[in-house]
Length: 310
Image (cartoon, rainbow, N blue to C red; front, side):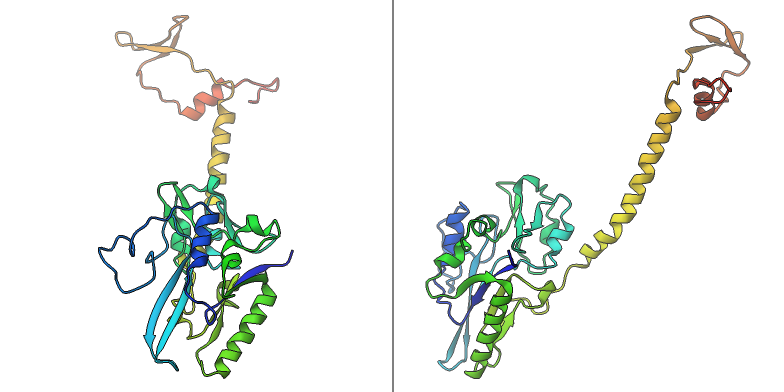
């Protein structure tokens, strides 16, 4: 199977939020009934909730600006995982809870492996992963790889009535996006751009941004958190230290095989160190043991016939 991608064409989007509802429905995510995330009254935006959260993987953003041929610009946006080719969330995840689906290139999750460290949230250049505290795992778009594996498109794509969302081979989606952006520019939308072609190694959510990148709430020149690279530098270092530690413990174990320390007691009156079982005088004088631990281990190790320690 070739790499797949979702194509979002903002010039065709009606802002119906059907994709947002479909995502909730397919993934069994709760949807509290509240105005703009419990605001006491209408805040002047149709966007709800105001951002991604532990139970919302996809939201449509609404930006109303003055300008354009009709005096107003509705710049609808899509906030969800961008499914980076060089996904920093996958790189930094210590448990393998985030991984790239080999068949599609989409970045998906395994909740059973999530250890709630939230490193992925700090690594994401798009500020996408959210912690679902009630479930104790990171929550983000999985690309509906379960549907794709069965010949279906992601839930959000399937429900889109105006045809603003498409799904298919990534190369095809990129070509369609660039073609559409060129048409929009010819029609006077000079800031129109195909977004996601090269960002972070190439995204698997390609977008046609009618009014430009910033107007639709997308990140201009997304950069990976330097902490991600640092973790990769530290891996061989920590691996070497771990190896030395294991080797040291193994050596101590080898030295300790067969070691049995005599039970001794010190007689204060005579200054003798006695064997508890045989009462044999082992040493006369200062009761302080002057032999090192290594010497005690070596002297009690079983011996070969040649006299060397095993």
